[in-house]
Amino acid sequence: MTTRDRLVIANCGGFWGDDPTAARRQVEGGPIDVLVMDYLAEVTMAILQKQRARRPETGFAADFLTQLRDTLVPCMDRGVTIISNAGGVNPIACGAAVEALAEELGVADKVKVGVVLGDDIFGDLASLTSSGEDLAHMETGRPLTDVLDRALSANVYLGAQPVVAAIRAGANVIVSGRVTDTGVTLAPMIAHFDWAEDDWDRLAAGIVAGHIIECGTQCTGGNFTDWEQVPSFDLMGYPIIEASPDGSFIVTKHPGTGGMVTTHTVSEQLVYEMGAPRYLSPDCIARFDSIQLEQVGPDRVRVTSVRGEPAPEKLKVSISFADGHRAFGRLMVGGPDARRKAEKVAEVLWKSVGGRGAYEATSTQYVGDDSCHPSVTGNAAGEIMLQIGVRDRDAARIRDIFAPQVVPKVLGTVPGITYLADQGRPRASDVVGYWPALIGRDRLSVEVRVGGETQRLSSALPGDRAGDDASTAGGAGAGGAGTSGASGVFTPEAVTETVTPSGDRITVPLIRLCLARSGDKGDTCNVGVIARSPAIYSWMRETLTPDLVKQRFAGICHGGVDRFEVPNLLALNFLLHESLGGGGTLSLLMDAQGKTYAQYLLALDVEVDAALLATVDAGAATATSRP
Image 1 (cartoon, one colour):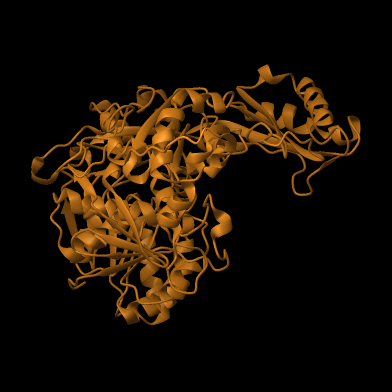
Image 2 (image 1 turned 30 degrees about the vertical axis):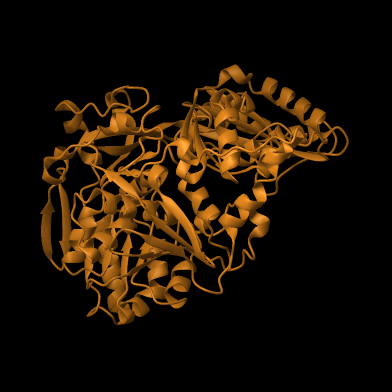
């Protein structure tokens, strides 16, 4: 990869299971230099570990090969580098499969595979814990030994540097295990522009770029608050980064594709799954409260002014463990008084299976009425899907007592009830618990294999310069708005704007004033709220308090609510702790990933002066103009 004044990086997927045609469309849609693919999530690693235990040649994302079958030949012909963490828990097997595919497609002479190893520490857990690494749970403080005998996988979040080493060794198809979602985008920037490993501002810019595109179409109009403004959802355009040597970059998509790219679509993705504005990664800390966005053309947003800080001393480990079983029973109840009838069915069902206290965790949800939240409209539903969930360590209790009692209620309770055609008797499935921890960098042994050569890399901090410990750098109260001036970090006062009250008070849903995006991190849901004008941001700071948000999610959020100010994005980010039923596969909630939470908050009625609402048009024009 030769150094030029621009690098074009195309993302073609936000998760394992995303649109399988996206890679081909990104390659065929226009010139690109790098194609990045992100496949991994916490639960995914446990699934892949189980696959590998059954069949040693598996353990990687097989969909990667399907996409390569469409794109490997044109990428090699056009000099496009492919980077992916599809290696899962078996990057070596994944690399071998890529080489076999290259041979089959007749491009083996053009393909040079790089494999990144060292993130998988599953086999080392016992020795690590016995030698002083307690791998304590980051939220509860419990030592890993409490669940060590039930561990299923353990992967350290590696940064961009191993991928950089592979690129510099000549690899043009690079597969890894748990390299971060942002790292696969940052790595080609470092290699292409020859950024120093302690050039914190430029590294932070690469982290921001990776965060923006890591979820695919979520930054190009997907999952967007103002969805009716999106011209088309057909053949959605996946994101493209046009990066410059100084760290600035443009977010765009191929012409003629669905979706849209505006400062608002990009802002929503920036606050997605965000904590404090000091965004932690293995490579550096990126200051999200320094980012500046500018609409510079149709579907083109320029990102500048990103500031960074030294990387954390320790790295995060994602450990999964077996945590019992769960099952769901679903029945459809329709006609008059659907809600009351569904409630009666639930009452009868719980009595027939020994009561809710007989299981470690239970849930009763009325889908179509309040499956995720209380009714917004107050109108009675004409049909409701009753969902009953249980979780327990004893699979036999679920299989023999709970499961047989669900379907019989169709004939033995209220009228107008049926079961779903593909549901039938519930089945117990394994629950995978999530255990986040920290590990010292010196405990890792990272390797890069390219063309038969193995390179061992140090995980130490550049120049042995240590930043904040990751256990505190991203915690509640850290990072706030920071300081102004040379740091480039914005203070709330820098964007304070007020309006002259008209005296005319009106009640409107919050969505008239704000946009929002929500997502999950374990059992914590984040809701990022973005003001539609600077004046509304000033109002938000005074009005949208943690107590108000906690009240809005009463009965849903069982922990505290933290608030962080991100004035440069006109945003407030809320962390709702203990709000996702345990999160991941542990949860019995219909929405275990917090996808609906932002929309529910935006439905909140607020009373404001009419003059404040009048500022929306100007703010919207600035953010979404499409010249």
